[in-house]
Length: 232
Image (cartoon, rainbow, N blue to C red; front, side):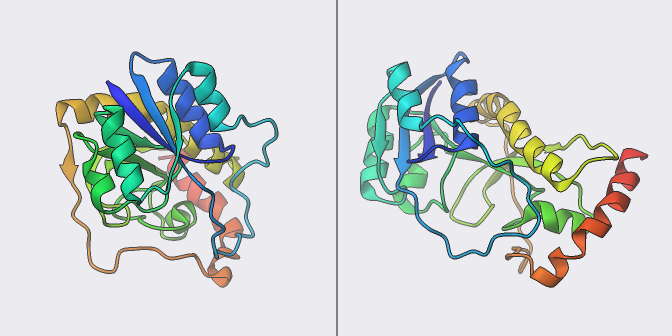
């Protein structure tokens, strides 16, 4: 299948991993569509869930080395929709993007698949890992063909995260990225076969940034959360 990979125009771990997995598969990356990076006005969490990487490869370098067209465009622009259609891609995969809207959503015949690091709809929105631990929800990844709703659309797969009693939030965050990469080929196979489930989204189910006073409680909550699930 021809796939368009959505990315940020900068080195990015998830994009790099998804690119490698797709490029090594039987599928073809028809284009990498990279959005210029934008500074977000979202406070940093006090709990780290990602490594501070060195040596990441810029997606332009990856694309050019593989002979894949690399285009820089705002993801919600008419230009992006045209690039996506002209690429001939049957589906899109999000390696990095903000909320997609409008014509871009309809430019790939089989849709655009995202990997959300939380259970949909129970852990929609920001800080999915933190809210999952706080609300005692299973941690894992949902792949879904997106629509204009935040973390909405059609479910492709829910995959729980393997847990260990001595996990830290950094362990969980890194493993969530790894499992997203591991899910991408299954997602493509399922959307090609139309094996999807419409998401029923309860009203007011979208999570916002976790308040600092709740975030401060998480380190003490995590060991008990893990014990309940590892021993189950």
